Image 1 (cartoon, chains in turn cyan, orange):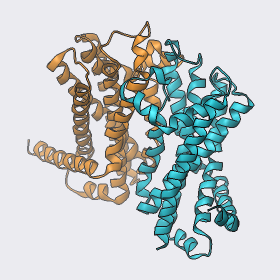
Image 2 (cartoon, chains in turn blue, yellow):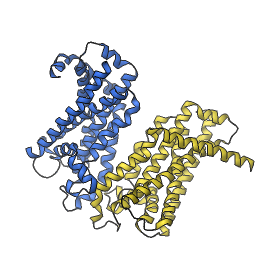
Image 3 (tube, helix red, strand yellow):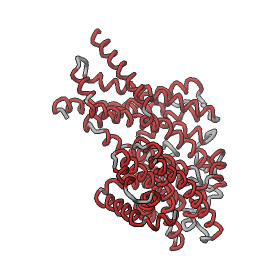
Image 4 (cartoon, helix red, strand yellow):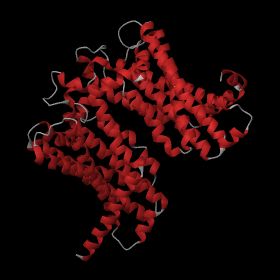
Length: 259
Length: 262
């Protein structure tokens, strides 16, 4: 795949530029991806902010604890939007013209996914500004770098998931499925409270959900304690696994689309 | 009497159509059932230890506390979905054909609201069953269950009126759909998910005066304690207030549409 991407770099670059143009020319299209996680962030912190008084809660600031959740949700919505846009392109026949070109299939997919990982920084930036304005702690440069990496990688995973659904169903009607997938995965983690405070089925699901490790990777800089390799590598491993897993289905969809 | 019976038939037919439409279109049904169920499950597991907070009201479990919030969330989303469906009818020209028919104009709106009311009743029963299956206890028993169903059904009509008014005024499904995030703003600024006295400011103060909080507490009261008249009265008054405003706004929007054609 790497060789194909290298030879197909002009395709990747063109698709990234197309996505950037869309963002500049139709900025309203980015609003839902920003609005939903911002409302959830402000809502969750206002409603559940006093959970930090529970014994065993690792942070004094619920804003700091929850902001990584919202960052990943924002990335998830951005990735889903990439899937919806692909479904629109398929419906309107634009994608058929792209497939008829000599561009390598993996490069087309890489272009879509790379665009999503960059666009995921838009909601992340706004969310970070809002969070710090209402009291979230500054995560430090290393913590911020890890959070940004987690956002971009989650945007990649969500875009791969969205694209695989778009290639499977070939209709924008599959949009709720694309949006709900990452939203559910992010919620079924330590999103509301640390693992030891979760109850019942959610405790079990959060333990085995790989996104929990991604969330803990992104959260390190925001909660008390140092950024450590021990808390970093499980998240990196989880992200790598998710990219490979979702990438397999997206590539298979691309191949089937070409048949 | 004959006109009343004719209008009742129109409301019945349009109400049935509205219910069928919702059950046949997953994009209309999902917000009413799947989304609130998911949040109920995740919040109960994620924030369930909140009952250990010193100022938390005495309840059998966090699920008992959360059930009313899920029902009202479902009603608000049902109202929004009903508004979207009405706006789609306007966009497709179906409402124009109804307006040309020899039937009462407001029966067209009432038909849509009858469907939303039925969905409200369905959602109340669904969440009561879900709650009981997962261990919730309803302190007030059968009488409490009946009161909850009545309150949730009437709330659905009141919230449905808001969706209908906006659909009739704008005639655009995307505008009504754009109100979806607003539902969560309203819910987060109420005691739907947490006691208002334990929420951070200014949300706590807003929640204390938010009429949605009164409705939620009226529905919650029979679950967590024996029935108190004060909570029930406040809930009823809030539903009547929102309903009167929303139905009034719907009537005005319908009149405006008939006068201007848009």
